[in-house]
Image: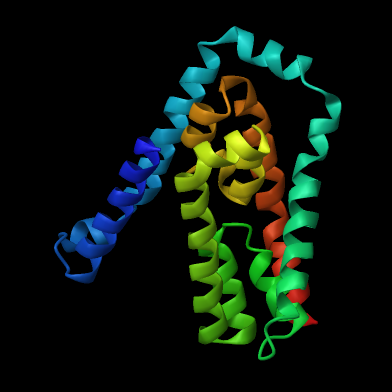
Length: 200
């Protein structure tokens, strides 16, 4: 839990620095965050490559786990459909479009803004950021009460990048390959599902 709080604290600190323009313009206009993410993924790759037992662990997992990305997508969309009943000012397809971001806030919010306007785009951005933050903060509780796959499903499209260290820590190294596979497939579905529901 302490690690999750530290990560979210850095996110809040970054937001404060951005709001008050405390960073040099060369940093904010550059690709620093992209290179930081590449560095993180490089470190994850090293940890996987240095552990030959990890691939063997993945082969020993139940093949049905390959269905986890599909179950994450279906579960998220069913939840969004249920919530749409309570939101009289939002249509079913609006809620499904927002939920189809699966935590991929940078891409989904751009698509939704383009199709539905800035208000919906902002809602999508906040919704997906909140999903990621909940995964980061609640990972220990998710594992304790719902099992080791819960953090992967909760992370959605973020399980191959930002939430991967938390998943590795609380679900275990044997689920790293599954988390990357899950994140890749869910990530791939975002542009197709968001644009589909926005156009309906």
